[in-house]
Length: 179
Image (cartoon, rainbow, N blue to C red):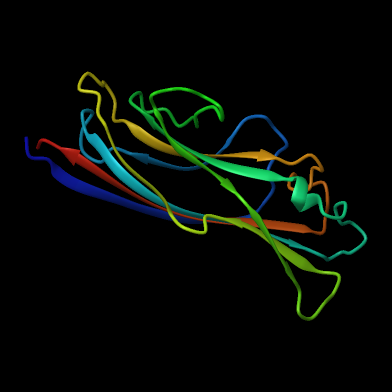
């Protein structure tokens, strides 16, 4: 069987933002099959970066080294039902495509010693090479990218005025169909 390939490209800056303290994931991106309900998902490539600037006003900053205790995990999933809900973090579903724990990197401000930035990013793109298809699907399948945030100091949820968080994502997906 020969598949007609269709690519979807998406990117999005998002910010400034806050990330609510919750055990539930934040939906970062969603791609829906471009042609038909029985489209085959073939592969994806994801780049992601969360940038947090800290400093002004200096009277309302999070605890020192809050960023070493915060953890961000991206999780990728395929949904034959078209769901926009990211998969559970420790799930064992056959719809799980992969995950990436992001490591923080601290950068001091060159001009102001009271300001700094923390970045969590995919140093290399997240790439999956897999095949998913549901010939009985009644809706177009989706690919979801979710982010789980463990932020014990509540630094990213808007509690501190000195926090400015933004994120950027770029996602390519490749789909195939028989027509």
